[in-house]
View 1 (cartoon, rainbow, N blue to C red):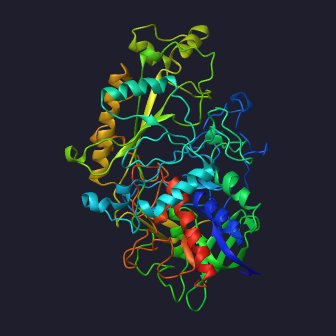
View 2: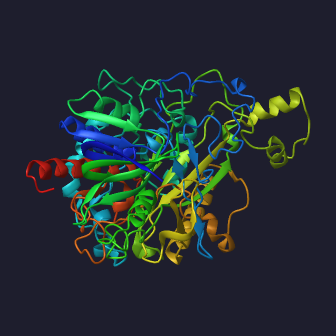
View 3: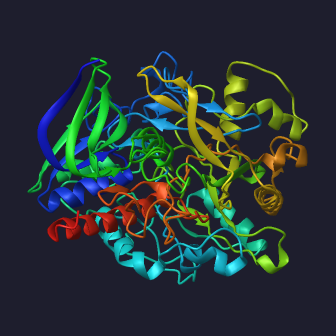
Length: 573
């Protein structure tokens, strides 16, 4: 097959356009560099009426907004899923890992929850705290200046709380708690669980002329047409195109491998165009991988050569290893005091939680290391087809008549609508070498690229943490005078612990460290073995605490970008 090779040599090629790729694009282009961005999906602008789903009514869809075969529903702005047609992945026997792929400019940042938490000082030194896992080669003080910059560039709401391991930042005014959140605050207080305003990257105040302000439609998962929430395309890549550098975007392009020369240094990438199924090569002085933790590992493992027989940067056999995801377990409760709500006012708020509970536990009294935070949902958002719960289950609770249709059914739905509060625990799992992804030697995708095979399981630490989550949720529901919905999951179901990958926070496959024998990148996200290749997605995380990944991806990508600029100026790479 003929490979079409471009004569142009870019300063930097960036593979992936999500949080890490978007931030690298912005910083490197602003520095005047010639940048090529390669994205596996199509172009996307949330303000484009042709693809916009924000503010659409359920009746505008023949499915009334139902999920059909899309994991997060028809309106959700993520072109991708745990299963992507023609792009399989495989599992070792006994493994259970769900790999989410987003295929669009901006990647997963178009539909995420925008929970924007900094890692704390203890989070970078977990092994020093309790002996589990490994410490990062950097500490909070190394990344704090970049957290500060990200806060100011992108914007997030919150309040200064002075909590030791939940560092404060630069916050916009937070929205007030909604009614269901006031109930949660009251219930949590009875159990001594802290509740503070959420920290979400949605603009409650104007910060520049390119972005609007949140108008409380509650639909951030649809990606905001006025750019009031953070998405990498609208907030980083589009502004980068206006800067002094040059940004060329290659969409619908599946990267096969990083190409190298006789000295083993990277020369660029090869990719398959989804438009014509032909293979192309681009050249660059520096290659930045930001395709997501597992996708970047896949590219490195497929980048085999005489100089790199085990895959690029993989003489340590650490590429793909130490894969881990946030733990997750959930519950919901029916709160009778929230019945018969008035519906004549807008309680949608932002498209996420207005309050949450940071980790509060005392590990000297617990049988598992590390912790989790609690996310809260509820209220009276716009219903789509299949919303809510069966009102007859609630009628049974009150020994009322079961059944009915027409007006009586409508009255029951209205009576109970908004009376359910849900909880999601999101916690830290310990990175283990035997949780990994590798190349399946017998399977390729529809583009002829070898696919990943996963080997993943939970340890007792994660299962015990999930049990604590479920016990806590049960107590919270009781405190609010409610009734749990559904059967409480027991040990036979790992207390509701979701499979690896289901929280979509996977990290660790190209982890950073000081020792090239046990890590893939150094503290500046640079491959130990190839100095002109960097990884700026969550693959570099040595560990992942009970905080969502995005804010740290952004900060580390900015830090790596500054280092790239410095090294290029010094002609070191």
